[in-house]
Image 1 (cartoon, helix red, strand yellow):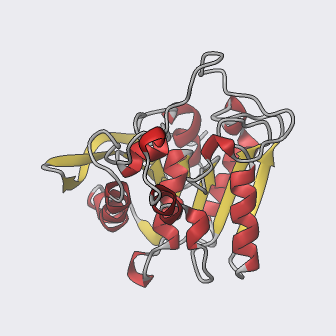
Image 2 (cartoon, helix red, strand yellow; image 1 turned 135 degrees about the vertical axis):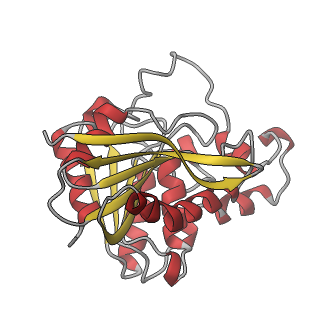
Amino acid sequence: MTSVRTEPDVAYARAGGRDLRCDLHWPADAAGPLPVAIYLHGGGWARGSRSDRASERLIPVAASGIAVASIEYRLSGEAVWPAQFDDVRAALAAVPALLADRGVAVSGRVSLWGCSAGGHVALMAALTAVDDQRPDAVVAWFPPTDLTLMSRAPASPGARMPSFLPPGVEVPAFERMLLGLPDESAGASSDAEALRAASPLALVRAGSAPVLLIHGDEDALMPASHSEALHDALRDAGGDVSMLTVRGATHEDPLFDTPAVLGATAAHLRGGA
């Protein structure tokens, strides 16, 4: 595998009175200008780290010929939506220059790649972007696309919770934490409207960036119907969208960090670059 250079802990913006940081990964001996991918980790918008699964996921994609910036974005305990959206917009503007400052030749193609909650933020940034902020492509792994449903979305008969969740555990209402809404039992009638407005499925339009959705068919935490619904809506609107179903995979399954899935991800991020 091509060797990859990594520079961690690079400031890309300031928000909320502090620096926001990213880890940069790029192939050490690139033959030409590189496309850029900005990666957003998962964790229900409330937890997770930009270094999560770097060796299994980010390094292989960088080795395939992509400069990857894994960014931190403000979590819901620090700032509610749309702070996360704002952080991604700042990264889209800043990351190419950060790479260029390090002698990395970049092609001008900048895409977004996110997993779970990070996939939601990536999709929201792409679907609401104006021309000068539009990413060139988006890859979203097992994203929530309808915040009014979350785990209640229709799931396949064989769907199961991921192994990192203890059996019978109650999953917090991360989507309500993201929007700063009260507990569902005390929720106002307007909560559904707020959740819908922050859902990619509600923002479908023609002319958005090409989207690749990747989802496991055995995901009970975030059922594959989230990606299926967005795929169908984008297709019906005339959008450029495709979907890859990972058979036998649940949420954040190791089956995603395999050559076939990483290769499909990298190919979409590279595009024609």
